[in-house]
Length: 218
Ligand code: E4P
Image (cartoon, rainbow, N blue to C red; front, top):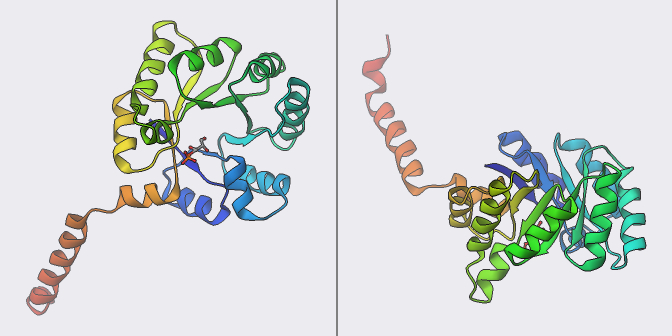
């Protein structure tokens, strides 16, 4: 399973790229708004840093507006992927954009049947929101597992991004469910690195080395 970073923060992206663990980035209007920067300039900078797909979301709700915004965003860089919410207008836009060779990530997906529609319309990626489903007492990961099964059953080219990831267990469960990608906030990535036994282990090795140091030299 690939990992994308779910952020619009350039410092977080740089750090995760240095760790060598992410192969793409997803943003949304909430994440971009936090950065308080001209947003197209920000998306362009992110696309120049990341050697993989960078999702940027349209704000229009109507077909014409979505397609216009998508074409403008797609012109920013070859690795821009257009995030479009799953609505009737959104599906129509996905169909048009996929025929133009513009990649799309259908977002705000809360059921496997919504995801199937997105795949049929030609979406490159589909993003089921796990955490937000868990928040309302639904099994978010079941949507991921169902979508992966449907896509594999029919050999569809759409890739499933497990989104709205809240903790490392979500990442583990997404990988077990066969998600192609999980998009994770920076804090979750940091939490995935940490383990108390790793810290204890490093300290013990260094302490043991320190104690025996004099007998190890020369
Ligand atoms: C997905 O691409 C979204 O940006 C994101 O995962 C939403 O997560 P949230 O539910 O934590 O806002």
